[in-house]
Image (cartoon, rainbow, N blue to C red; front, side, top):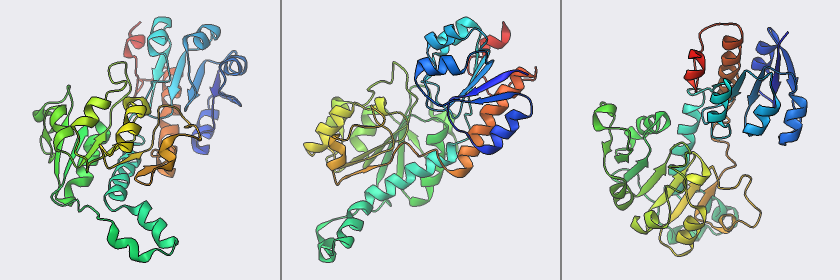
Length: 318
């Protein structure tokens, strides 16, 4: 029986599903040396946040497939996998709704100053409510950088708030999003016009620090920024400087340049920043779907069936 290595715990239903066809080995460490040692002889690896480097692939000659528990594959050296004929699969539709809901939550919490108001109330400072102004979404402008699957779902969820929605994406034309209440504009216009900027794009060399000091200078002083995609898409140092200088009014973050963030990260001391521990996709339903879809990819490939969600399709043609 072929072996499947799990770098981290996955939903029990997916684990049981894999055990129907494979010998499943549960890993205990995300350190590269331990992954190499524990996954020896395995034909498949299913990962969550573990990094699968060229070194790991080279040390595991039996490896045929790497499955990502979720959408983003920036923690896998896909190019090297392709060179070696190792298939990479993911679960691109499994967590869309959970992440989209989390983004809307951050938007609402920032506009209504939810965290600040909760803290004031608990501290017995009820009268201070008059010192803070909140933002009505109706009539305000939200701008989105990146119009992929999750961003489009966010647009659908925001449609009922009577907001103006604008977006920018170099790969998306207005005709591509026909039927959605969003207008495609330049990135500069998104930053200049928006009351809230939502950044949601995959992490590539071309999107590393996509948002930096220049973009923050374009934003309104009353505007907030939201990121639930990948931390390094935003230059965190530049964002902290913009927040400290009052260039922007606030931020809602689920992701960071370094994860977990250091305890001394200045963001922790800012009342106008809402933070969550990269858990936007971790609803019960999404966790099960991510695990099941990634397990499905392994099972399909290893049993000779058509693969539903291949990342490097060229491997299938070899």
